[in-house]
Length: 236
Image 1: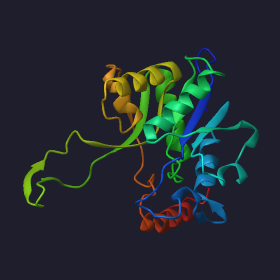
Image 2 (image 1 turned 30 degrees about the vertical axis):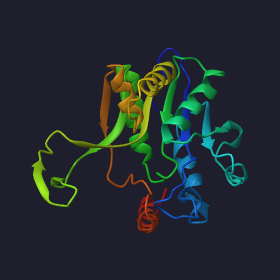
Image 3 (image 1 turned 90 degrees about the vertical axis):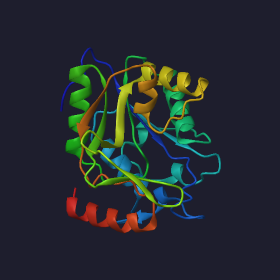
Image 4 (image 1 turned 120 degrees about the vertical axis):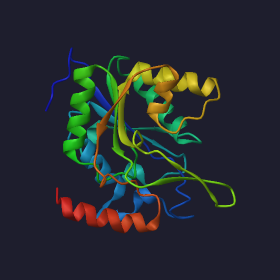
C-alpha cells in the first residue's frame, strides 16, 4: 500500500440518496442482496480495504435501512443528508467532511451501486493520485463503435472513439479543490455528471487510470445478475 505523502488523510464519500427509478420504482438497487450482503455492504467492504480515516454515506431523509447495515469498520461510518441530485449529495458529503478534515486530505467518491471494483484498481488509483499530486479517476477505453443518433433514431454519424474513455468511480481529489469545483460549477449552472467534470470547470488536470470492465454500475435489474456473477468469480 502506498503511503500518503505529508501524512494527509484519506476519506470516502458514497452518494446513496438516489431514487434508483431505472432499477425499480419501489426497490433501491443498493439494498438488493448478493451473497447474503446488500450491494452497499459489498461496496463498503471494497473501499475499506484502503487506509480510510472514515467514510460518509449521503442518504435520503426517508432512508431507514443504511444505518442498520453491517458495514466494515463501522466506527468509521458517518452519515449525512443527501441531495436532490448526485452532485448535491457529493457536495453535502464534502461539506460534512470539511468540519473534521483538512482541505489537503484526499477524498474518494464512489457510487453506492459499484460493488465489484477491484482492490488492485483502488490501489492503483490511490498510488497515481498521490504520486502525481493530481486528481484521478478510474476509466476504461470505449470498445464499441459509437453512433450519433437523431431524435427519430436515424444515424447521423459514427463517432471517432480513439480518444474516448468511459468514466467509472472511484474518482479521487483533494477535499478543498473538489468542494470548490462543485460549488463553482453549481453557481455557474454547469451540468455536473461526475467529479471530474466539476474539476474540469476549474481547469484542473485529472489523470485517467485504466480500470476494468467488471467495475459495473448496477443501473437496471439485469445488472444485478451480472454483479452476482462477477463477485462470485472474483471470490474476494
